[in-house]
Length: 288
Image 1 (cartoon, rainbow, N blue to C red):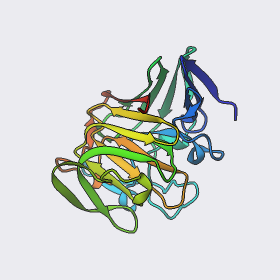
Image 2 (cartoon, helix red, strand yellow):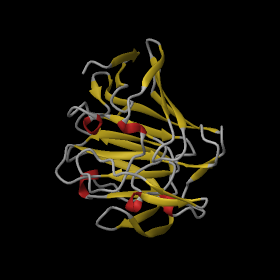
Image 3 (cartoon, helix red, strand yellow):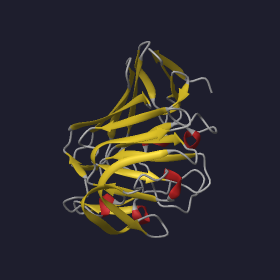
Image 4 (tube, helix red, strand yellow):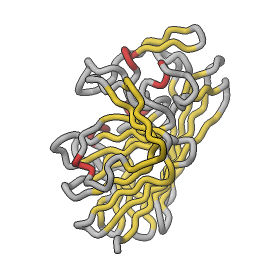
């Protein structure tokens, strides 16, 4: 798949609009900052947008403002799993703007199993110092819509790869990776305590983030700062056993947030016509 290539300074990025608005590569000074395309389709991609919600919805159903919403399971390889990652990752996006260093993708989704029509834009821009991603959601329906946004990047991983992020809480999960109990510390902490990311196998969400997320690849002598905006206050981390990648996903709400709309879940409600945007920057650096 050829995709669309954009570049600026030492950065190069390849974008796949038809594959869920995903990325196929992001490099800096020849280094892979994201996992390069590992297989065809969005599940083999480097990164994809999460819209209009993040992660799983228990039983593929929830109730909102007196309305029962049932969504079809959508995992391309595991149809028994509950619906996850929203709708945009499995739909073709189209290019609305393009320059040498940036591309904007757009998506329009009519009401269906998801009862609210919505529009989305994904701005992907390179500068001399970072890659900047902005995801915008607009409620095109005539009633308030629950909403969540985020980004799902895949990062290269070796036994020495370090992941550092300060969070106050870690959700314990059941066999279906749905949250069961929030474990909170008195202060924000690094839940890996400086050990390599591969030392823990997790698929959960962290709350109360303070500051950026940082990845270091000592054998390559480089690192990456992930700087989400304040609206992306949660981090989903997926570290599968025996894989050459892991995911650290800045997201706006906890897993299954639509079924847990109390204060602190991060779920947002968009009024008809309301527009909401979130962003993150990926800034690489040389380790000293």
